[in-house]
Amino acid sequence: MKSSPRCYKCGGSPHPKRECPANNAKCHSCGKNGHYQRVCGQSKLLIRVVFLHSKS
Image 1: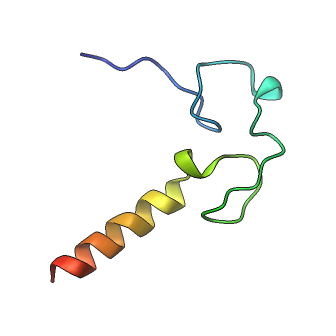
Image 2: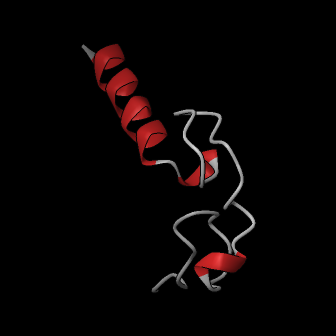
């Protein structure tokens, strides 16, 4: 089953970039503006590093 497309900045249903609610948001994971923590690539990388480190 294929998942429906999501906005890469907020994780919501697709919409024009200028209308994204995350445009003025600050990510609580990486500290950068313009996206939410739940879609932050940095937080996914950090989770993976912590997981791999804890397995060794």
